[in-house]
Amino acid sequence: MTDDIIERIESLPPLPQTIIEIEEFRKDPNKELYDLVKIIEKDALIVSNLLKITNSAMFGFRSKVETTSKAINLLGSNFTISVAIGGTIQNLLKTNLSPYGINSDDFMKASTIATTFATYWLSKVSFDLKEELIMPALLQEAGKFILADLIISLNKEKEFKDLISSGSKIYEAEKEITGLSTSEITAKIFSHWKLSDNLIKVIENVDCISKCEEKVLKKTQILDIIRTVCCVSSPLGEKNIEEALKKAQEYCMDTKYIKEAISRLEDKLLDE
Image (cartoon, rainbow, N blue to C red):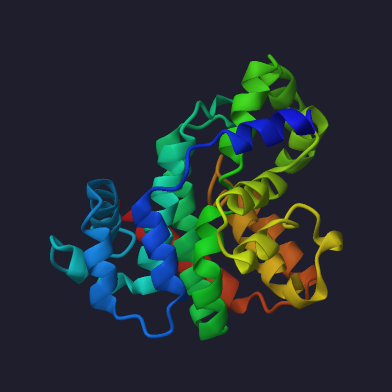
């Protein structure tokens, strides 16, 4: 089964030149925001996604944002980069997500909610953590596209859904059916595309915290809480929030800012 997954990952198309340039921009210590604007304006799909998200009720800007430069100035470079890479990767991996009971639009909405939640929460905790974890918060569930395709091809969709219905966690059902979980697959995809090692390391053990290296443990725990609150099948679901708060206590994290971020996000989504 693992060989089949690896073969699927290795057959993925290469990242578009725009994303390669965005990655180079992200690593450049002397980067200027204007350079990011120039890169993103080359890709109509990224511009469309960026303006759609910027004008959503989740941000609630007073006037409509119509230019790439204004959107980037309002959202910040790291959030913009996350949206650009996330939308492109979703387009490259596009497949039927029915095993998870969602479609690609649901997935993108849940990913955007996750990134916004991370921003609200981590802004109160640490600027550095916020800047570093915005992107993995958005991208950590990308492996579900590969797993969904594999589950369907194996005719295991009903078995997978039955496992979840009977009380298994999503990642437990994934491992039962395919041998690997979303976080492991996502890390392998990003390794194949030669994305940042830091991005890969904080994501790869979200589904198995005990395997996590000490130096990235806290960041991976934060991603686990974000993933739990913003579960792709029911983001901000009551049970998910309860589970996330329980995990936060187990990880010895203050839940005050988590609760505030959830409340703020719920208020924003009510406006949609």
